[in-house]
Image (cartoon, rainbow, N blue to C red; front, side, top):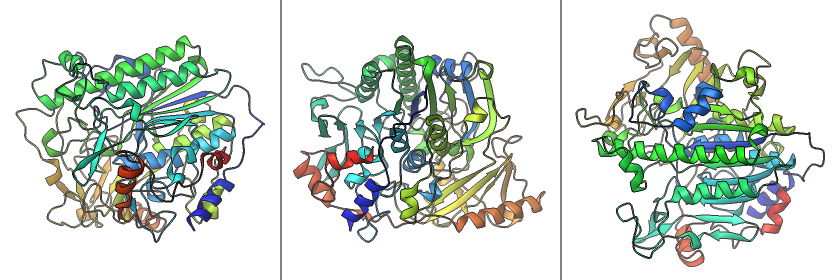
Length: 569
């Protein structure tokens, strides 16, 4: 049956189109990981030295700042949404590990994206784009159909999991042994990137271990980005998806960057500031390379985070979303409203330097990129399998100034009933943004909710401009807010007038509350909610016996061959 699903997947992808529009832009999509609202320079007070991001600040200042850009509250669902153009409620709201499997559902019973959904890179390949992926994948690993190759990418260097160690590339264990996670796929290799492994003594505390190799993982990834750009034939359109590890936990960074922020006494904030600085330097170098290669003028560069900064465990992860409430793993603004900008030579001159207040979502790039490439984003493969269609809207007429307003008038906020952050649960609609108003509805058995409180939203907390610090001790995981289905206990906000979500207007505007709740209930009937299963120990068997201590696909002997999968394009 798996072979049948894979064959169906190949059939509906189609072949390369010979009819291509002239001057299709290069598309460079830069996805930061866990970058908080306050962890970027242009959201800090003038003169603040805690965060230094001159390169990204310049991109925002000379491009378009997207001030109301929304994503899911954590990693894998946001990434699933970007790749497939679907609101997470129609593709994935769970953060289960890539070793998960439910043998009763061979389409959706895995981590991330169901087998029979078409990724944006597949559409762009049909339009003549060269497509490359670098960095965190986190949308499926189990079968050959979950591989970036099957989603339309010609090459990939990165890791399958939510994160790994920046020096040893390790994540999770099989028995007592830590497994590594770094994979390289290109024209002559498809397997663990063993040649990029550091020496056994290389670590955050020992970054110069004698004669051993010791290279920071983000440098390995950014070097690959630069290699792709340098070798690319600029006469062909390029789609380059740069999925950074930074600034996701663990807090690890080269020592010279820590030294830049020695004046910060809180160790977690110091590390996070150093990681942000490293990220900014790499973005600046890639922008400079695009300009040297004379590709900038024909490029669209998109930068945003996958979710808000992580503020759990009393600042252990270093993130900060001030003045927004909450953070990663919460539907308050700090978890879902993120730093975002657009730049590149294709942005019209008269649009530059503007801050756009219209709504936009991470899943809107799917239709936007397809429109720029001149291809139809309709997912016929998914339709044939009975899966939800994409929810993406083409933002380019608004971004370019051809129309005055964003096509997006509402953002639906997904949620999960999972008891733990990386567990499985049911798909729930947990909120709705309509224009300037936002409704939140809590779910039962919510993660962080150790008391099993009913209808609560996690992380009802504001941090501060200098957080984490030594003077304020917060544990956001224990702070929840009751957001019920009656106006008396409702959470309805005017997020333009009240961006910190301090005061609910539900009792004062019961009609609006009822209307938005009815809409939310209608949306709940459309959700996609497969059982993702549990950790399959066969993944460990493959990691230890087939891949030499590295994670990789494990279902089927070898899945399908590289030659078969290339039928995708």
